[in-house]
Length: 530
Image (cartoon, rainbow, N blue to C red; front, side):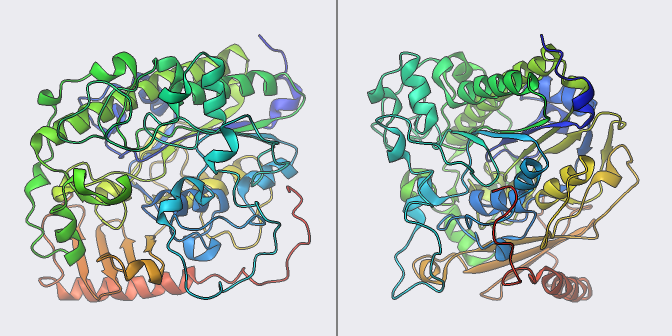
């Protein structure tokens, strides 16, 4: 269709595909024998697949901002969903834009707390730092701005020249997605709905209101929006005389679990294999985990609180709905990859696939994400297809924070001060290469928020090639041998005290290494990508 991908496209394009709250094992290529993901599996077959990839924070905003900046949450400042990434934060996308790339974000951003206002607890007194930015700078992701019509677009959104947002989850439609759906004939009363048990929908679970079929066709769903608008950007960008970077961000399979149309019926709940660890007593686990396991999903606060899975019937329904959502995403990813072929860009486009964090999905009796430092929430799918690199599978450690540095190196884009991630480029096509000895994972609540919940204010985890060690601000610990006990059922903290001491020392070294030296340094007056 286009002859644009000739001389100028010796510089590779980048297609960065990210889902929300997708477990590493919710893909066929990662060993799941129930979910059907042929297009992602085919991408994996020509990619380097990182089978040992982890987040640097198991909550949406912190990890997404770490992906963007290549910096730990305590460095870029977004340690929880109750704050916004600094408008002046440097990002790998800003570096690509400064290097002449066309840049676009389609779908969920969640760099600002617009959809997470319920996480914000008012502080007493004044803030620690005054904002240097004009009023409204942190309201780009507020859904109210998009209800009547599309507002003026910012000239720059963390490096993106173009941003078309799908702000919410489940069947709720907002942002650019809302106006797009209305233009396709959708009804406002079906689209912009509350997160509530009486929201319009069909086949709602009697066990948990967050499992139901949306009241509109799949053609209006967020997955369809993200795919269609990404394809449109690729088509137009491929016709121009410059390389492009597309950040294709699906809001699914984050709860509410609402696959639209026939995707809702792809799997029978009673056929779903349930996790063997779901009846874990959590006898030796931190107290807040035992409390969470006793909380039924129907009783969770503000539809997002970590909780237990309820019962086997609910869990089967949740898995069936989640797989339907994942399979719809896979279908649309297939369409996007076909667009690359039709535009003549397939042979010159780096493709990344990952997720921002996982979901417990019944493991250890727990449900959803955040503050539960088990494999289910901490491990993510990750693969990188780079033209000219051999495909392989590697079990060497990788982190979400490494993706930006990797892309900058692959595309010859200059990095910036304060990048803490490692480039994974040496690992592409080489199953024996490694760039990390460990992955550090942070998890924080604001002190004022922690006083209102049993969740510890701070949790730190260290992942090595063989062990996982976790310690929180109440002094509680966990230690697991990930090789011999991949289900994390035998806590060794009281058994192998020598290994625990070794991990404490390694964690200390990791925390010292992660201490940020970039904030407060002499700053560029205006970022070249801004």
